[in-house]
Image (cartoon, rainbow, N blue to C red; front, side):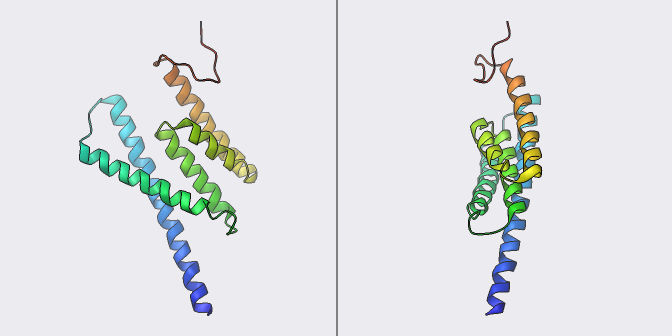
Length: 146
């Protein structure tokens, strides 16, 4: 009986570590893609884009699967880090509403969660402010500059 319990703990730890690695890989790939897109305007092949999509979708799926266990497990540090990973992935995907949702979740994790949320929101605000000058639309939170 104890062996089964230990096996589940070990498998859970491996799954968490694997998800951390997937999130790191997805963030790295997205940042690289976004930098190349901005600097070179170089098109990505369909296979490169498909591979990127696969990496990102797998990371989101597995991180989401872990945070769905919030009521079942007592892993506050893991859940906080997964919400931060999701927020950063969504930031790179320019899915800003999802960034805000993940940051709202981060606020539930004490001072460290609050600091993480503030860091991501600062990056979001910089991204939105930088984009507002190059797009015709203005974010809802801002007034247009005369």
